[in-house]
Image 1 (cartoon, rainbow, N blue to C red):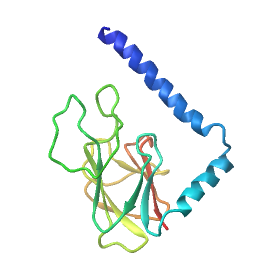
Image 2: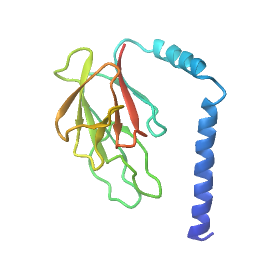
Image 3: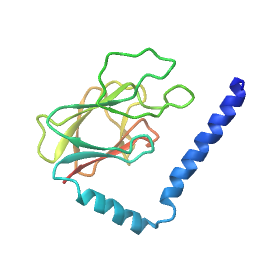
Image 4: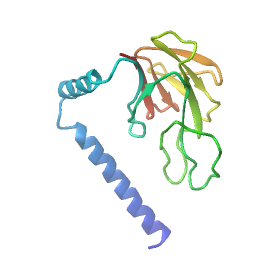
Length: 166
């Protein structure tokens, strides 16, 4: 199979996978989905969390005492770095990233109140954005987040997280 044939196969399979992912949400109405999400949240122990909402970042991250670094692995066309990433967001398509930098941002719980955290954009190429206002976070500055604040890695809002305190 040549490169174009392989590309057609990959594109079709990727598209079908996304449709299957969306079909998981379709049968239930918004109220039923919200009920299921609430039941999941109620099972979490008290604490601070980042809940990933996008297709590439759907994990729930418990925030402890230490900073958390979020980014992505090197694409096959990039050299690896020695940076340690605690949580990865894999938004690479066509062998390259769309919006997430290898070290995109840091969540710093130190010197914060019990219901807040600091978000630091680590000089990412596409920025870290507060949502839904689409306000860009100043690179390398501490932006304080409160319960319910959403932010995205890149301006599209695809790689979206919400900070919650339980």
